[in-house]
Image (cartoon, rainbow, N blue to C red; front, top):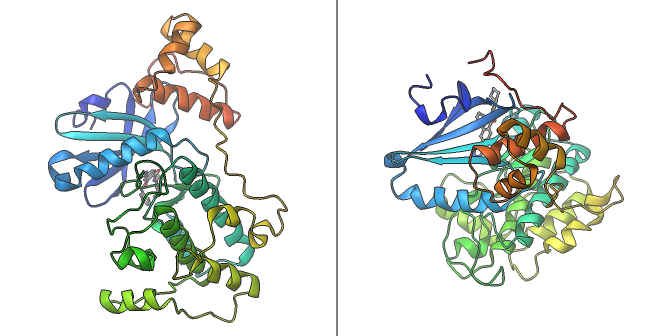
Length: 340
Ligand SMILES: O=C(Nc1ccc2c(c1)CCNCC2)c1ccc(-c2cn[nH]c2)cc1OCc1ccccc1
């Protein structure tokens, strides 16, 4: 099998394919040095065609985004025919399938998920990004049922910050803001807030607020801003959804107001914390373990890791840190593992 992917041999032990979409195949793998599970997204450059810039956008964005509710990029490998992205393992699949399996979520469970979504979106907005394709299919669940935001292929980092307007109409129609589909100039952050309103509605109702198989009538429904409010929605939930599904982006709730919103604080009494749990300083134990393994001085290892080349060393550092955060021993496997 690994003869098909020679660049991975000795570094990752490939296992089954866990998903294959349009231009990407996702395979389960083990990182050889730590034994940690990862997902490897394999893209054929020829098949990508004019989607190639999308992959470059995604890689550039994910290198800058390091957050507990954003799927972590560990390593990027590029050959003349392929891109490989080594990504955080999310074995519980898509939030979309989870909602479908439960029909719809009760307010308490929806609140837990929505706080994680707000945390991730607030973080990327502060970093100057707009996701622009927020939907349940782009939210994966890890082994602890925590949400991980994926697919930054359509994200924007407007020059000179988030105040600058965007033009490209993109993302999934049912989640797209009125100003985005009207071809007008729009602010990415404001369009993301609308999509989050559609997302919250989908969590609590199990179906979409605006839906139609014909795009033009779907667009008319979105631009009308009128949607059905089922009787199981509490007044508080309906109020929050209404504040997000404001057709006029200037009247729409902002991410700052959302973080402190009473609906989100209910039962938590603390605002959504959106800071990344990842420290900016390097972890001593991980650096020492790597230095010993590679027979380098700790200072040299610290300098090397700090280059963040998103090579095998970057992956090994992050996955060692992952082990530490999960309370597993901060140890690298010395000899090739039995799973070879
Ligand atoms: O780890 C990922 N997926 C994943 C891993 C293990 C398992 C499953 C799923 C569910 C199917 N049963 C086997 C267990 C996984 C991680 C990151 C990304 C990813 C990050 N940016 N882009 C893609 C995609 C991933 O998957 C795609 C997928 C496959 C089947 C359904 C749902 C999702």
